[in-house]
Amino acid sequence: MRIEFTDDFDPRLIAESGQCFRWYALDDKRWRVLHGAHCLILTEAGPRTYDLDCTEAEYDAVWRPYLDMDESYAAVRARIDPAEDPFLYAAAENQRGLRILRQDPWEALASFIISQNRNIPAIRRSIELLCQAAGAACRDSREAPYFAFPTPEAVAAMDDAALASCKLGYRDGYLRAAAEAVASGRVDLAALCRASPEASLASLLTLKGVGVKVAACVQLFGLHQLDAFPIDVWIRRVLDAEYPGGYPRERYSPYNGVCQQYMFAYYRGKSF
Image (cartoon, rainbow, N blue to C red; front, side, top):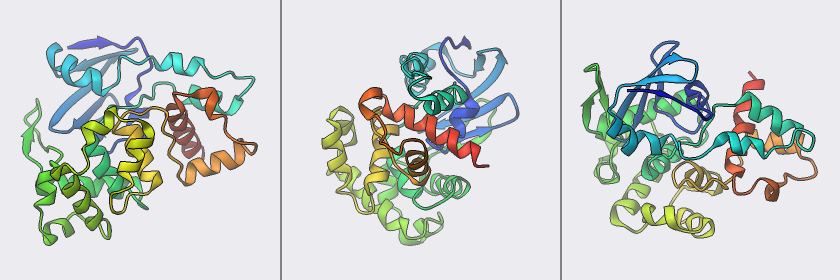
């Protein structure tokens, strides 16, 4: 199907934003997007226009919500006053097209546990190894193979050697503990999507190896709590350099997480 996006949408910016690890550029105009067990080939067909290798029914059921197409990111950007906050305005304009995906909560939790103290290529490599080890084998519309993201039950059932083959290092114990907690229902991710930010944070922090930063990433990218504001080394640099008097969270609520992504991607891009 062909679709013309009327709101902010740039697959390159989304893929490079650090929020997801299974978006792959096939060439300058095509992207392969893996989401759980689903796969989408996205092809640029013109300004703001893309061909999607899915039916309209699949787009409405899977990809429209995943891409968060019912949220206006142009309206979020319009909240930023260039006179009051020139840095954030510049970041948002530079990252126009970035969206916060509605990722599967379990996939986001597992991915950000794996992400701790690692660069993006290493994160991607470990996630793909995990999918190959425990995910279902699938084929896309071109008959090219891929692996679904494994369920928490499948990860909990992996033995030590299988987990070690995914090159997780010390994180393998954290991932196993999270998988067991989700599979058993001790941590109910579906319920956390409906919970208050305070309650979801408290529940996520009960998981072995999950600290405030990883929990905030899961809140933002997995539970779609758009006011969550993960603070990593890049955001700490932004806050120190651009907001020495304090970042005005009240001004941008309930979209502080969107602002965080604009800042993160913009500042990280300026440093390379």
